[in-house]
Every structure is written in structure tokens, then in C-alpha cells.
Image (cartoon, one colour):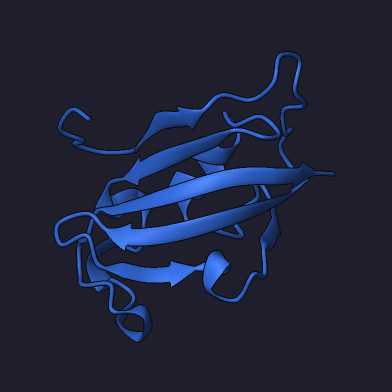
Length: 116
């Protein structure tokens, strides 16, 4: 992946089937996801650890900006890595409760399993 200055970049792992449903702003999407600190590769969260997928309404500010923008480009059944710059993740404050340092870029391995 090229150097990421600001924003979110998607790295395709598994393409969605042809004609797969795409989310619209406000759609409820459900994903399996694992998050990593980009600089260290340290895992800080995974839905696979508890086998509990994560659901949210996309594009409405319920999640970090990198997810809101990146997930709108992902179809049902697609798996990709979302590379999020700090300003599209948790910013200057980081997220200490999860071990995310200040101004950390993050990588999320995400699979879209449901769109409503």
C-alpha cells in the first residue's frame, strides 16, 4: 500500500460476487473485523475473538470516519483491509482503553456479512 497521508485506502482481499448488494448511506451493515495499529501490527480488537459480528448504520457518524467512508465502497461478501490515517481513526487522542496510541494510523481487516 502506498504511503497514506490522510483518509482511508481500501486493499481488496476477496471480491464480492458479481451484482452483490452495496450499502447506501444509513444502511445497517454487519461486519466481521479485526483492527491493528499500523506501525506495530498490534491487534486491538476482533469480532472473531467472541464470534460476535459488529453492526452499525453506515455514513451517519456512528463509527470512525475511515469506516464510514470505506464501508460505503464495500459490497456484500467483500473482504478488504481499510488503511485509515490517524485523522480518519481516533486522531490525536488515540483510544487508550484499546491500546491505540495518539495519532495512530490503523488497519482493519473487514468482511461485510449483511446489509439491511
